[in-house]
Image 1: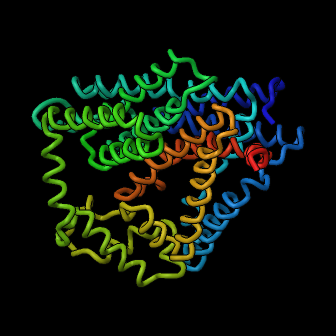
Image 2 (image 1 turned 135 degrees about the vertical axis):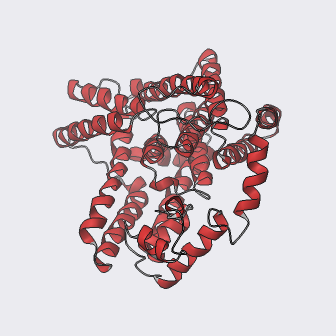
Length: 419
């Protein structure tokens, strides 16, 4: 049941969690320090209010997430690197974003505010990305941006890599588009256009990374949106895709990136191509099918398969594909748990979209979470996005938004009323 009047401690929890959401758009240090405080407050609130985060409707998500992390821990012990693996596996604490977000989203005033906080951060740092492209500015960092082909610079915002920026802002853009795709009460017509404008600026920033993965994933996600929304929405989606295509062809160098990159990626002998990386990753999986190589050990095993004089930047720490990466590190059982976890959340979001008796806000949250998750998953087919903390923490927030619809059986009640 949606709550109306949060108590003082819950207000403090909301503040720190909102700063985490805002900070995730530009600073992992700020975001995770605020998340740490929010987690402490959440534990106190949960004890005082006897809050139960592990409700029946969310059990499969939590079960498969626990199995996924548990098998990772086991694989580290089996491979003889328990300390090394545990130091990296501690990053899985980002799963705790989900129960915190689900709890806060039960309060009516906080549902729209958390979305607005994310949108504000995305807007500000998407504008910064446009400044980066035209000027090469990289405020607060001594790192010099790579020049874009023919004109400008390849943007990366305040993140360490261009791909991280593209995957984060592409996912955020699709989340916001999904949020306003369903009309009705809860979001005014004016604010819907504001969110659409922010999403468009974020997509332009994504385009200006010149990274093929997030650009292709964004186009595919828009196609998914068109299929979900029906024929009356096909025209605006087609226009959006066409606009991205025109930008890709008119911005100097983007089309060349696609042509040249495709040739390299499909060459099984090119050490920087995806096909080469995936073939070697499959060999690692074949040699270590049950427990993988253990978290933190992919680099050493992959390096041993390369020629001795291979450049350091070709010695990779992951498989450039989430499915292969999980299987290589944790083994095939861990891959099963990983995919089952994804299936659990996507099925809940999908069912949330199909129940007509839900409120417009609940269906809006389901659409936002579904489309944002689709975008993230598509990017992870050519990059280990789940292993990228900056983008991963956004995904956990996206999942919290969608799963909040299911807390305490609110969807179950709606389903029952239609039978």
